[in-house]
Amino acid sequence: MSIHNTVQPCSAMVQICTHKCANTALTNLTNMPDSTSNKLLSGLQRIANKEHKQVHALAIEMIKADVQDPVPYCLLGTIAAEHGNHVKALELFERAAQLGSKNPYFHAYHGQGLTILGRQQDAKAAADKASQFTIKDAHLADTIGVIYSRTGFHESAVPFFEKAVALNNAPANFHYNLAASLQFLGDFAGAEQAYFETLKRDSKAYRAWSSIVGLKKQTQEHNHLPELIDLFEILHDHEDGSLHLGHAIAKSLEDLGQYEESLDWLDKAKRLKLGNTDAALLSYEPLFDAAKTTSKSLNKVTNKASPIFIIGLPRTGTTLVDRILSSHTGVTAAGELNIFPGLIKTATRTPSNMVMDADTFIASNTLDDRALEKIGQQYLQSAKELSRGAERFTDKMPLNFFYAGLIQKALPEAKIIALRRGAMDSCLSNYRQLLTVQHSYYHYTYDLRETAKFYRQFDSLMAHWRSTLPAGNFIEVAYEDIVHDQENQTRRLLEFCDLDWQEACMRFHENEAPVSTASSVQVRQPLYSGSIGRWQRYGDKLDGLKAELEGFI
Image 1: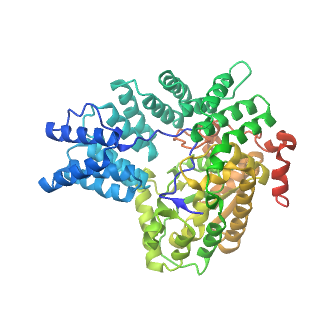
Image 2 (image 1 turned 90 degrees about the horizontal axis):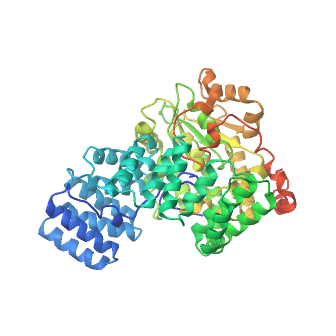
Image 3 (image 1 turned 180 degrees about the vertical axis):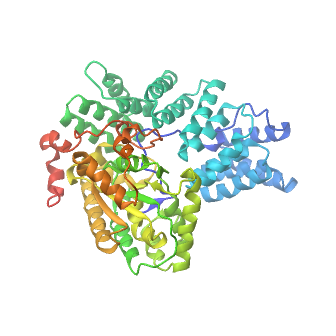
């Protein structure tokens, strides 16, 4: 099992629309010098028309004519990005931004390239540079907003999405992007309105439909099942469309108490995607086995800072714990950072185009104390702005559970909190939640049997960390215990993180910080126990899952 390009956050069904670079700045480039404007506009339009070879040849001639011209580098970067060569694309966008430093477009392209490779802090800095200019182009405003949203700064993203809509309210995706950031900020009424504005412009915008359903509980009097089922039939052969719509239908049916039918719709939703998934992408054993090797011969380095890593399977309480801890005045939630995996990949220099794969974990065992200390320092520096400068912060990237051994090596004072949840509820919650559709590391959620297999491997890895990592730095917390014994478990978490008691941690639902995960609605409500034992509502539909998890229930 290998992870392509970068370890991305465990996102909700709500996902910010990203744009292919060729489409981000095709209008109103009047705040650039005329010659630059004309050349960039012409080249981007030709790229949008798939004239890649012609534009490539033209860009080379432009460089020969003037090596300091930023336009050809931006065009070549766009072509590289469209062909999936994001590393080369970033080099070219960076060159364009250096040469065209007085132009917001080149900073925006640079920032967009940085987000794709997971360099969030640098992407935020690029967006900051672009935002210093007077923005008169709707696509540019939207692109800057996307960069801010991808780096977790939704409070900065919203004004640019609003500007994009004000400058040009026709594109559906402008409204969708605004809606998503409003949802992450907790403005559910504003988000719902913007999602419906999306549908006014594109009635087949399946992501908007699934997001609307996720905002509130569906009822017999107020639901969208007829529209969703009709659109599912229209888009039944569209992988992502059927996933989003099928999940939205399943969620609606579950809200209405039709649990067995809900599970049938999840099967329909995932069938096409599963059928088109390479079997090799469902083989996670080498990845889990390689991760276990990284705890051997724990090194002693001198990094003293103590970030808090919250790890675990998706939908098992990681966001809840993040909100509890970040309600403390001494802790800031930095979001789901993909910094640490990227640093390990860079340090090991493994040849694959994957950030997380077995070869990279095995190669990491050759890193000496100095290299590990440097990784720890780079992590802290890279996370500084994303954590809003806080001395103590949380990193809630769930897949960091693969990296617990390496985190302990590079950041020996770091606290690692592993969330656990009952096996049946864990697997069901992973299966019923649409995570990212863009990357392969959540492919196990397309099949209940594969989900159970992944759970067993995860459980084995947690047992390994439990036996190898220092008890003062690694702790497992059960979601059910937090729900049933909130105060004692909150005290336990704070004590583990060397934090004093603060009553605000009991009122985590009042925390106003952005939430960019599938739990963006739930964690703004007080604790409730309704999701515990949810699997029992599905009758014999989950007998197969029970058989797969024999000994774990």
